[in-house]
Amino acid sequence: MPTIQRPLPQNAAPSSDTSTAQKTSHHITDTLVSKSLSAADYTHTHEAMLQQTLERIRLKKEQGLRTPDELWIVDHNDVYTLGQAGKEEHILRHTDTPIIKTDRGGQVTWHGHGQLVVYWLFDLNSLGWSVRNLVSHAEQAIEDMTNDCLNSPALSTNTHISAHARRDAPGVYLYSAYPEDKGDDHNDTIMLGKIASLGFKIKHGFSYHGIAINLNCDLSAFNAINPCGYAGMQMLRLADFVAMESNQNNTVHPQAGYTFSYQQITQKLIDNIAKRHAGLIELRPTAPTKQPSSRLP
Image (tube, rainbow, N blue to C red; front, side, top):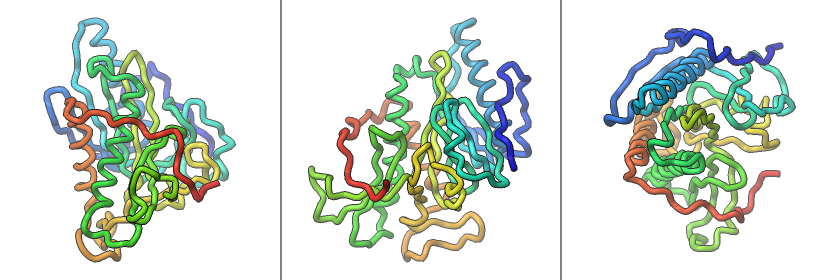
């Protein structure tokens, strides 16, 4: 039975090894860099992310330097992570997948192949963002990308599926409503489940950790936990709602028409985040406190 692993101490020497993870870097702007890691080990990736954040804090405090913000696009090897205040009671059963205690907010979640993880290493003070701004930008970037995919011509169902955040539960959720029910009254919409999770850590005004979006992953991994601490939470993936290429054998979703690749969806999201980082996309008003009805307990 796997034991819960603890994070490496903060004064541990940074490691350039991410357990054979392949890394690429790209300058989006002068103040924003993206880095891609595939088949990434969680512990080494977390340690590198933390050490990078601590170094940025040091440079700003000692030399007044503003270093470029970074987006880490990560394809993790299978892992369960338990947030700083996470309760082990939300781990329903132990499997062969490691469970790692980490320093982000939130409860327990799963990361693995077919899930898009993006870590936001941002200097919030230089951006003029509050923590609430960070969370809202993250949720709305996911909404924008997901709704853009859901509104593609490949969808021809009688129901309208859309992605929205909730005030009472961080993350992004999918809702279903018949087109004729669109309008100001959303009380007849049904929440189908959760497609994206988020959890950040803020240290001296710098953020790290980030978001996880289920694209075409195996959702059965979530059966061993209460996702994000919510018993009975239905987890969803984008590939069940739009046509997506498979990472494994390049087969596509049964729906005919346009298909999205993992890379295309990733680029849609990164482009949206970059525009927000540059101040080109403003925050929308947050969702109302009253939520649509749900099929969940």
